[in-house]
Image 1 (cartoon, rainbow, N blue to C red):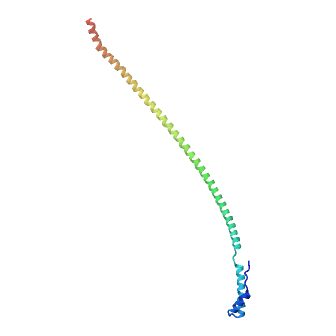
Image 2 (image 1 turned 135 degrees about the vertical axis):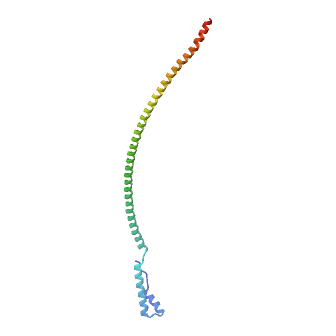
Image 3 (image 1 turned 60 degrees about the horizontal axis):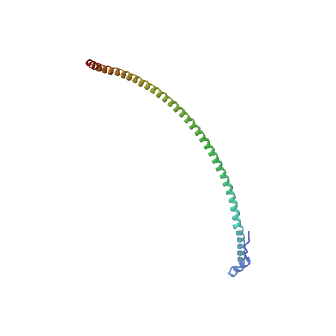
Length: 163
């Protein structure tokens, strides 16, 4: 530490001039010198503060580095855990979608078979109805022919009888 120049002789002389007895003036001067020395030893300097701040900064950097490493480790662990959970969820969804797709294919196959059977039955029924209608049309043709002949034959007989 830097020492402060304190002139004890000058201080004692000034105290004597002010009316303080010589022994008391000398004692006061010595006490003040000791106080200055004691206070100088406990005085905080810029160098002291710089060193303390540097130590503090180093400790803080070390603690922040450790904290950052722990956070990185936890984030990595969390990322791994989330990847595993998402993979499990994806597998589960794929299985469920596969089961749903199989079920839908089976139901669509059953529906298609049922529709084919019903369409086949409807086609058979329509063919039966058409056959019946064709038969009725043939009967109507014969009846129309019979009516035409029964009307035309007497007409022809009358025409030929006049000839």
